[in-house]
Amino acid sequence: MLCGLCKLPALSYANARLTPYADFMTDQLRTSSPPIFEAMQSGHALVVGGNRGIGLGFVKQLLNDERFDQIFATYRTVAAATELLQLAQTQDRLHCIAMDLTEESQIEQGLVELKTMTPELHFVINCVGFLHDGTITPEKALRQLQTDNLMRYFQVNSIGAALLAKYLLPLLNHKKPNIFATISAKIGSIEDNRLGGWYGYRASKAALNMFLKTAAIEYSRRSKQTAIVLLHPGTTDTRLSEPFQQGVPPEKLFPVEKTVGLLMQVLGTVTLTDNGSFFSWDGSRLPW
Image (cartoon, rainbow, N blue to C red):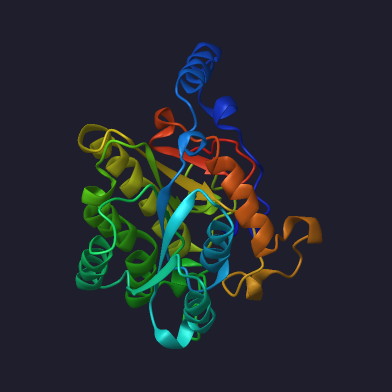
């Protein structure tokens, strides 16, 4: 999520991977498959990690979008979800569900609860992510690696999203086209790694990308109307990035509202042929 902080060069997927013919065929396929949001008239959305930062921004954006008549948002603890829970008291379309992505039983139970309110979802955005807390900060050298810290990165950033894909399948496997998106990070691109450092965060985001790329292949067989996509939001002014914002040019530090708006623009172009794709906030495709 914080590649802007690392000043990594922007890479185009087309330039990095596709031949002109393959690029042409991709464009042709996308043209023949209409954007999923374009045809949506009455959808049900789920924001995972909707209690703050980009997740809360998505909740507010979706509440202003008449295409979504029900919005579900998860939170880990009541103490960290004050604004979200207050918002739900004034918004009949918003339903809040307790869920900790590091606990498989909570993922399963949370989606069981959701199924009592809707049989299907049309848009899911997973915004859960971890970079630092009071004891864990990104590692700059191998000597700083610790097993427990690495496990924390993978539990939150990688494994939780894979389990989410596992339990979401029945809610997404229906006749209407739908999107399952996850906030990833350009820093998780193996090909784009030029600076090193941030071992746990980089590796956990790379694992996230592989988990969901693989899930996209399975979904293409078992939930044919689902497009799974990964999104790099750019450097966003949230608690996650706050300690690392020094030196980031103001024009490259996005407020949450701008990030959400840009990502919604990207999502607005997603078709079923984009299943398994990795997009940046500007719509460009990123290398794995």
